[in-house]
Amino acid sequence: MSGQTNQKKSVKKLRVDKILSHMGYGTRSEIKKAVKNGYVSVNGKVIKDSGMQVDPYHDLIDIDGETVKYREFIYLMLHKPQGVISATEDTREETVIDLLDEEYALFEPFPVGRLDKDTEGLLLLTNDGQLSHNLLSPKKHVPKTYEAIVAGEMGAKEIDAFKQGVTLDDGYTTKPAVLEITSVESSEEGKTSHVLVTIHEGKFHQIKRMFETVDSKVLYLKRISMGALQLDPLLPIGSYRELTEEELRILTGSDTKE
Ligand code: URA
View 1: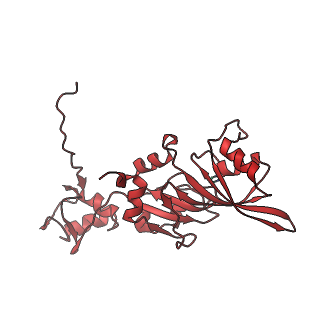
View 2 (view 1 turned 90 degrees about the vertical axis):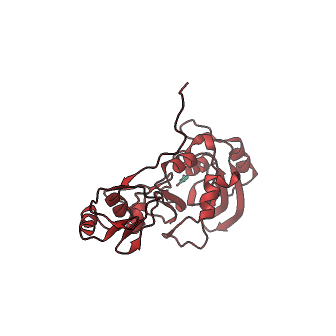
View 3 (view 1 turned 180 degrees about the vertical axis):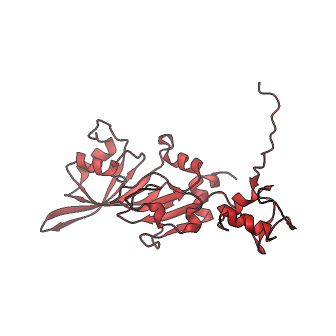
């Protein structure tokens, strides 16, 4: 028995300079200066201490006449281009975080899962660790759909193999996946198949390794959905935007109740 616990959600207070620098109003020392010069007020009162603890969701913070709209998390849909890596930092390679404007990078987002350097398409960037965990947890079986161009002619045999599960080079047998064939094209170099593949797990290079088991090779790979989130067809390659409230709601599954 844990006894009586306080059921009221405790309000997390933060230093006002931390909030303001997090929201892009300057460095901590710039904020300190602004406070000293009387530019910052909390609930209508000019403050003196830049280390003052405030409730960012309920206290009204103004800086230079502008009311600060605080938020802790950001959720970005990136149309990842080829040639950048799904990491937060790297000494040699350009990362997906390098594609962001400072106002978003300030939130220290990270990619939810990885796409290979030569894979393009939907990549969610957030600083919400819980959402990331929920989307990546093997227990949640979140489906991911990829568009691919692969070598050779795919057909019923490959559809069935993916449905049954294929054994990868490390001995792992994949969970049932759906292979749909959109078209088969012929050229002087041979045949290629345009396909859609949906998997519910995310092993290293999974799609590429799955096609190797059916004697094919991935020539082009693009992720088009993750769970209920679809890549916005109007989002140009290399661009990103915040998720809409609706996208966030369906992604977190919070519209299932009410
Ligand atoms: N499977 C792959 O092989 N590569 C990716 O980038 C994503 C899934």
